[in-house]
Length: 150
Image (cartoon, rainbow, N blue to C red):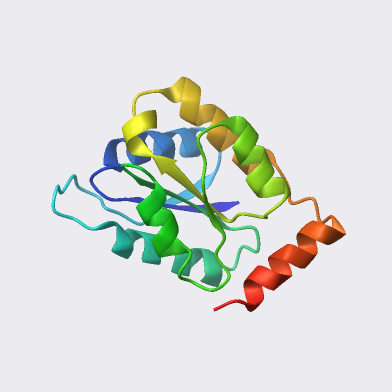
């Protein structure tokens, strides 16, 4: 599974931790930046890179992980791209639900809360990556409705 990962300054340290974790666990993780800690960078450009790559990947199961201070900004930016279903997730239960019910393809993590708390973010990342979309008719119908928007 190809995973594109990106973050601004507010998520930089957590992004680095998540990227190392993914690679250690055999995932094909590609860092879309920022590659340096720049307190003046802006999250929309990194969200756009990750979203664009998820949508254009040859891997049909490609996903993305975005991190900023609160996760809301990167989620809003990523969701501007038709076909992206980015979700802000704080715990393993929500990670499971957003994959099972909504087929989310980008996970958005809050760096301010999860930075240096591997016991928290690892469970979220593991659960989100391991949970398949249910394909239940009601969930499939709703995802199709989302894809018709915008």
